[in-house]
Length: 89
Image (tube, rainbow, N blue to C red):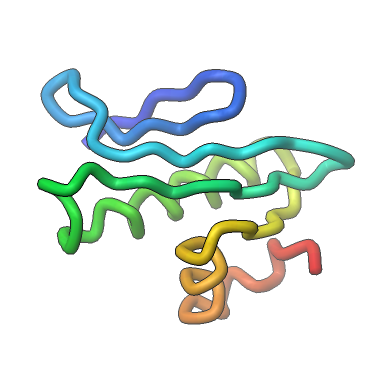
């Protein structure tokens, strides 16, 4: 799986096809995770989890805090408390 970026999206790619997308906005040194979407054929395979790890990597590289807006991102941080130091509550 590879990852691709544009202004407000991170894409998970497989065989040159988008299989998942995370939409975000950045304001005041905080990355707001608005949506995490995985194509139906790839759900339940850990794709969203890998995408969240890529979001974390991106936020660290840019020195951004994270504010999870969508339900999946909120649940990810609830179940992965080792990343709570990145949250902007």
